[in-house]
Length: 452
Ligand SMILES: Cc1ncc(COP(=O)(O)O)c(C=O)c1O
Image (cartoon, helix red, strand yellow):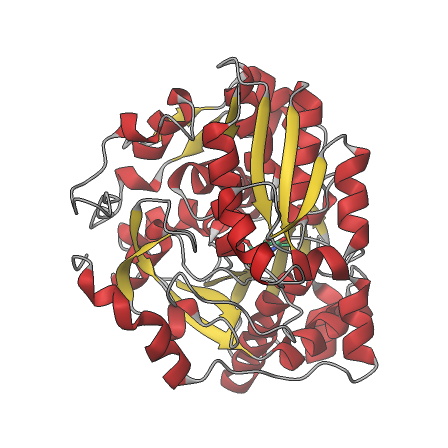
């Protein structure tokens, strides 16, 4: 039995895979909220450079990865694929469980797969500074690392509750030369409104996005950069699935079940999209996206047009959403707090190519501890959602006596999230399920937008 399946440097993918070429139903276009009309690519130029906008709207199946991006990817890629043999043994399951370890990157997650690409495309377009938001801090640290690699400045608006709970993420960003401020901040019009009402406002990703978009669009030589949700981010993340596809092929395996956690959808999409292409062409497999019960975007949120941010500055996107005014419960420790879901993932969910499940945070941390005590690696709290599902499916495989092949994206390590583990281990975490009447209240105004 092979425990670790590695690729050579020369096997790193040279092209990203674009699912937009193969989707049975295309994603509905983003709309201008004022007119209800589709936005044209040039309307995005205040926030993104043209080379990135071209990728956002492209329907080309394969898009070349520039040499300079591959050179940076080689700092940590190709990433190892592991057989989770110790976890299998502990569960007594006939399932064969594989995990793609994206935690080996310098910031510790899958996020630099797109951060490096975005920093590069901005750099070659003459941009000198990027502004972004971050929730738990993984994305902010990934972009800080990437901007540092390409010699451009980076400013990160970090959701205040995480800024206070996770000081080491800020230190990591500063180590790579970025500036990180708690959001809502007094630095932007979008943030000032909330900051003046309450200087200790816990913040939300929606508010932090509004701040970063405003900054990126209005500051000199600057643009905005985003770590999930949109099409070009999912495109860049497909290096994960393309590598995993080759690694499984090397040992004659193919997954029956693909599992990943989903905040905005990028790590999981990066893993499953190259396999989803086979599913679209008739191959059978189960593709399961996992989310928190306290932010149940796919399992409870309707498929609607909604804003990407709280201050209503972005276009309207066709996606599963809890409403752009959603603020996560402060007791929630596990990340994955965004009110919406990637339009690509949302469309695939509507087309029944993927399914979604929600997990309570106690179950996810229990799963994370089980993983750490069998496989050794300590997973990020986000990743724990995927592990909870892997354990559920491995147990089902045992009950049914079927040898399923399970592939999971292990999206990041949790070494900088030990405060959340501490809260769990000392019994301070509790489950929280977002009540249905609260969801109804949050989405009640979305009916005024066109139906996707
Ligand atoms: C380790 C890790 N996994 C998963 C996610 C969820 O994001 P996405 O759904 O874009 O992969 C995050 C988000 O910050 C993360 O840090």
